[in-house]
Amino acid sequence: MIDPERTAQILRLARAERWPVGTIAAQLGVHHDVVERVLRQEGVLQTSIVRPSRLDPFVPFVRETWARYPRLPASRLYRMCVERGYVGSPEHFRHAVAPHRPRRPVEAFLRLKTLIGEQAQVDWAHFGTRAIGRAQRPLVAFVMVLSYSRAIFLRFRLSLKTEDFLRGHQEAFSYFAGVPRVCLYDNLKSAVLERQGDAIRFNPLLLAFAGHYHYEPRPVAVGRGNEKARVERAIRYVRQGFYLARTWRDLDDLNAQALAWCQGPALERPWPEEPSRRVADVFREEQGRLLALPENPFPVDERVEVVVGKTPYVRFDSNDYSVPHPLVRRTLVVLASPTLVRLFEGTAEVATHLRSYDRGQQIEDPAHVAALVEEKSRARRHRGIDRLAAAAPSSRTLLERLAERGTNLGHATYRLLQLLDAYGGEALERALTEVLRRDVPHVHAVAQVLERNRAASGQAPALPLALPDDARVRDLVVRPHALKDYDALAPLPPETAPAPEPQKPGDADEPPRDPAAAG
Image 1: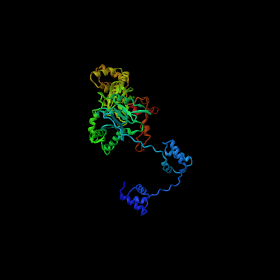
Image 2: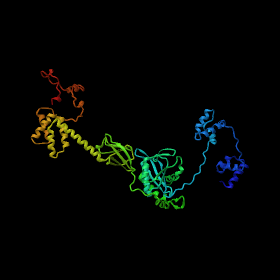
Image 3: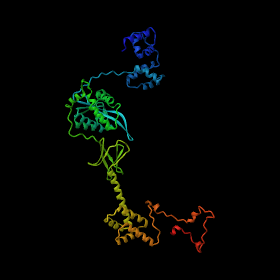
């Protein structure tokens, strides 16, 4: 509405000064629709002349088509008219056909009244995504509002899974200290798996949950968001009254702030039915009419069967969790809460970890890793003992004597394997026999006997090398070369070259000797 003074000013400028509508609107700072309405009411604004349009021949076809297909988009109708000879642009067509589009009748709604303690309305609210390490998790809020008192429960999650949906119910019932007789849902997958008209296939997990808490799950009709308008308004209130411009460290901090908000400002607001009363006062009255909570809560942990591969880890929610190594190649069950991941074999709990919402992480229990390392160490030690027993049977007796003395068997096995590689099985067996006969069961005594026997036989020193278990390397034979062949690669100047040694009789018939072999 504009005041009479402004109306008189518009009429004067239009009649006396002959200003156009746009000039009047710009000078007076009003919208041109306001100027046109004032002039039209006073009979000043003349009806514009209707000019012929390119659409005129197609108007009967447009009306007939839209009468048969009211939901047909204008873009498809444009293509149909082009095929029949229309030459205008899509933009002109869209504006020209707008007055001919069938309009839905405006529906009037009754204000819904609910009995005290009778109904709650439930829905998810989306708040974008949250980066946790390398993962992008959806940030969603579970919202339940009691239809009578308008008390709100709010809890944020990083998942839209059915288990999180049911956990939100469980926490809301605990917060309200009771259960409403009916919970009203939209047609989301956590509640309704399939719907054909009035035939509804509920999520079986939701039905089991509702049976445990003795309430009726009731979905609204398709496209009838007005039937759960109270939770829609509650979500709008959460966005504007709580989440907007709020800072928080992590999900736990955000949920702690949400709980304080539900117990504070959300309860202190006026009750819509009677603004003189607060929601908190009506909520206290409604609590006495809610159904009692069952003695045992419904299990809402996420349950997934997983298979342990060749390594002692299971994959759950994009992360790897360790298990005891004897469980490889077995099927386990994961029970996951928002904070813990527990693994079971049958009814026995075999591992527990803190849950990670990152991705690609390896969450380990140090005890699992230590047990696997110890198992591998024992396996290597047993393989070494078996190899020693095959090459030198007396090694078993020596290891038994060393065990009686409390010697470290792992180190003793390692040293005996080195001696076996350096001197061979026969020489090691002779040395072991002598050491046991002389009753000096020490590994270093075995090494002394082997070195003494080698020196007595005039053999070259034993130089143990750690070679891989590859026959192509262990059985490789290197042919020695004369050192004077290397001297020919870098000849010395004549003045610094050493004089040739006198040749002894018979040397010409002998091949050159390798100085290294002579040692």
